[in-house]
Length: 441
Image (cartoon, rainbow, N blue to C red; front, side):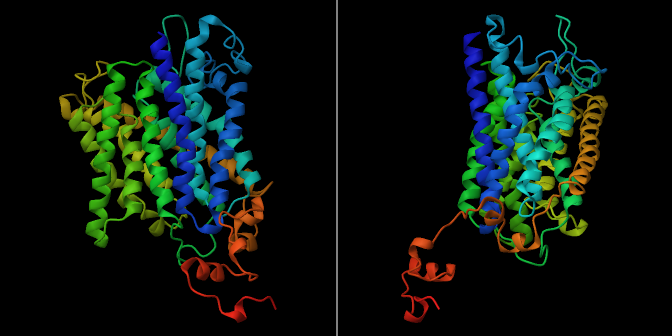
């Protein structure tokens, strides 16, 4: 028991690391003038969701069902009452901590779809409202299992019996659909798609992808809730599928553009992690590898759809998380094998029929449409009340200065009296600054 609790707490810490990792991943992908705002959106999600989770979020998610599988009892564990200080609830408090990190990163993922153009205050408001009426109910549907002691959980896990080991539906489809909704509501960045908006720091992107991969072992293997063989299966499937996804993404890049890029490799990491998340403890090695490599291919192709369809998903939340989450969730119905995990039935390619694939589809699209529709409503309410967007001037000149009164890269100490960043770049490169440029006025 103590060993399982230790593993769960370790996994919770690993999943917490994923949010700063996501901040670096997203932060490197935006332009120099927006990097701090992107980091702050991720950390803001951590702050807001972290507070409301312990007040009522856990209870709304894992309290006894009160609405036919839709919502938990928000009063049952209000403020974690009955859990904190209860010696019989020590394992439960570890689970509270573990699931808190899932709630945080799900909200943070959405930020990538609306980078470069929203007010920080509006984002914090959205984070709290969306977590309350979208994430907590959906997590109840997917993660809250009924048990023999009389606890009644959510409808996807218990009535539909669609499988999602670690969050393909509740986390990735949920966040991806919300990102699509907000991209529609808020509109395009100034200059998109004609203006070049390349990532400003690709080493940051690769560092973030590495931190996400590291933390994801807690995300997936930790969802076994025990230090056992099933955790080991989830761990190795997470590793191998992600490696295969990198290859899949880079192959698409090589065929389409003739080059394999660091951004593509990093994006392939995330695509593989997303796709294997729901299936990691239900498939064998071959299933994991196929899920991974196809996730790399599908997501690499999907990220270009925003240009054809006209929605500005800044950092490809839709193309990676929505598409990858859908693929991974549906893939359970294709590759699931009772040889690995004796729950449910074999998938279509392992001798089973179409029944599980149908259940997976119902669960996946129920979450997609719920998140999309409710997020559209929330988004439009914020748009016409407190307003989403920064001013045109702030968007063009720099959202970091406008929203946070800071700059990610400060060269003032190197300027020699001048005021241009170009002058600082000359100093850094070793070129002498002309005398005429070293004086003000």
